[in-house]
Length: 118
Length: 332
Picture (cartoon, rainbow over the protein chains, first blue to last red):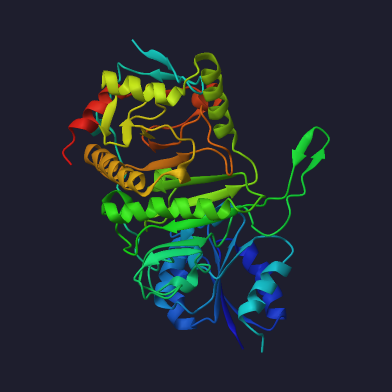
């Protein structure tokens, strides 16, 4: 089963995304901070990461740069409630950028671009 | 006593807080520390960016591979998109159109830690030629009316990525600021039958109080009514409204004076965050007698707060005459 690491400081996002992504046939792992995500990266070895930007502690852009330094080929989708982080050129290290919405179709389509559920 | 000064083109008032009289060493500049990690603009990571629209480098260098010295790429997550029609329409008294435009990033160096101010002149020349080449190319698209060229350096000036880059956005409208400058210049021209910028150049050279440096083609001044401490304008001495119409010698002289001006600024206030913006005539316009292209360099040393937003006044704690003196005397 393809593994997704979901990084977001809001537990409600984990509940929402996990249910939808598991229904799509993915194995979903959670991290509530950037630091936790980096710690879990080598243990979980995810096939894809969904990464929030605005988090306390290490922000998503800094986590992204670290993750891509470790594994450039691992797709990372930035997920934020805000459009303006798109203006941050460091976000270019991501493979996709989606704006958080209650409709998860955009997220699921973005995930499908990089992963085929098994 | 503080002094109110009026910008002769825009009519904008500035408060020069003379009693504060800030010297370069009075400004606290947050030194940005390289965060490290993956950089999407570095050589070897070309696949992370959209395919380049222009690059300079080794003669045998292949597109989108290392070997470049400058690259221009479309913005991966652009503010405006290039495909589509404008579809201008009214909504009652309001106007709207589709968000059509071209947003590009000029990667000025292959070296991650090489700042724009430290570029050798020959490579700075490439940056100015790249601006020209992209403006010419985008000017062929009839949907675009203006290309805004700008650079943000340092976090306080809006740059989050330390790898040296500037940006341009081709717009389907002429920005209000440029319209106001053109209109202010035209009013002056109608009254005096002279270009206000040409008059400014003659007066500044004569008095020398606000001259930072000059060469045969260009003059750098601290303008009379600057919004920001150590603000500088770089103006061509020969009248021209179009940036792209310069000859090669002029571009070489522009690189020389820009390099010197930036080194002087950096010597006064090391690592100062700044923005620079090219002000030029709209795309495909005839040569304009009343308008004069130039660069404005705005160090980010003061906060814009309620008073500035509400009044349009800026409070500047360093008189431009003092700033020019510090910049002129800086060891470069």
